[in-house]
Length: 165
Image 1 (spheres, one colour):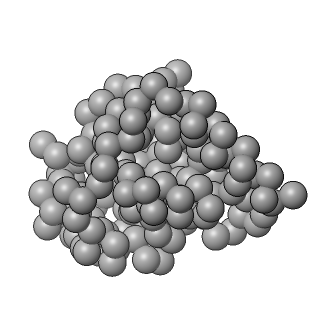
Image 2: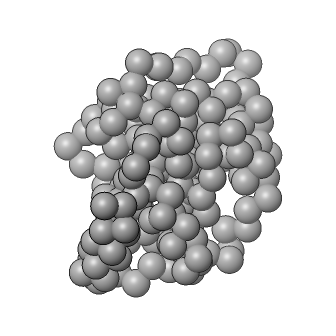
């Protein structure tokens, strides 16, 4: 059973939760061979439920002490663009799609996603472009993120955040 793990971190990102649990997105995921969806919804107010006609297993939770188990089981990770969530998924060697929260202003998310995409480590999109990206992406083109080098990631973040000031 191929699994998609979606994480919003500690924040609220109901637009992502709604988009990924929408019928059209589920149909795309099903066509790609996925049949299990695990949603970590943080402080969000949207708690999706699947109708009896959906052929997905759905697990929804707000928080866990660790996301390691869900990341390990995932065949695809769809995440908000928080630095910690991105690094965790990349260090696990998981294919990663980062969804930018366009409602957040003056943050480093877009710059971080662009740079990691430029380096070939992930795909990124917005909520509205997620279905199209899922249909067109080729996960085999992604490069593994070199493990054990958080200082490089940290230096990159310092640079990006410094640009925002």
